[in-house]
Image (cartoon, rainbow, N blue to C red; front, side, top):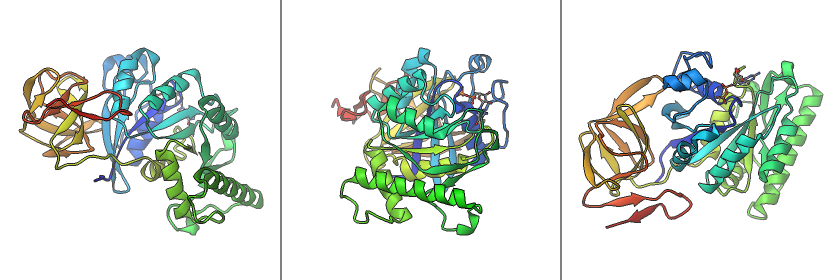
Length: 370
Ligand code: GDP
């Protein structure tokens, strides 16, 4: 069974705009109405003072927000290479990721390093080429660097309107809401650019799908969308979105793409509990529930350390506030209070049904030690 949830991370080279993008996402989804100035200590995802001082995101936190009737759990993945254990643990709990690239620099060494790690965990990804408003930004060049340096097939889903300082918006090649009136009026040159980009996209998708599609020309938006979803889940292609987080361009379209192309979590809420502790931060312990249901007041078994823990409270972390919930089920990511000794990396389960969640997700995820 699948939930209307997306557990995703934002992967980026330091300075590509991950913090700004995260803030815009939280703002756009209504999870926060406070826009923090990046690097000045008010950024909502940066909980830790050390992190604020350094202006880089060192410690992971999971933040929930809602978009189009889906719950998005954003798992912060540190972009700094010094903290690779933390990166690995956060990659372990993701079902998908948005990789952010600088529209001027394209793929940079650190973005490549994080990308390779995400490969190890077989995380389906979409790319967001950010900072298209900057002088020297070039979507085509960034897409070429994604193709060449990462060795993947990029599928560009948008055409930017204007360049550099005159970058004002993006046009989706696959429209999501059937409201043509919402489209900006395009001049002849733009109409031509959009038509030929759509044709290239259809051709690329048809070629990758190699006969699996019935319609090979003039694909409908729905056909194209579901084909691209398959290709993304199967690691055959990377949808590419673009915009400017700073100017708030392309953020809604990116959120739509997260819902459309990244996978929902799998798992069975009725099965025995299997939850992974992936982060401890002060009183809070961050959990990913893979199977089963965890209820406030439950006593659970820490398989790693062989002791019991009581779940005093279950909290959903929304930017800078915490909301109490009674339960968390398979596929969800929550913070719990009351856990005393369980360490990051350990599994919480039922004592009568011990389970050990193994680290590499490409391997069989659940190994029973019973
Ligand atoms: P992080 O290190 O990846 O979290 O990147 P930040 O979000 O802190 O952004 C790094 C710098 O790039 C900051 O000065 C941002 O204001 C700036 N920035 C972020 N997004 C954009 C954008 O879309 N356009 C421009 N011109 N600058 C941006």
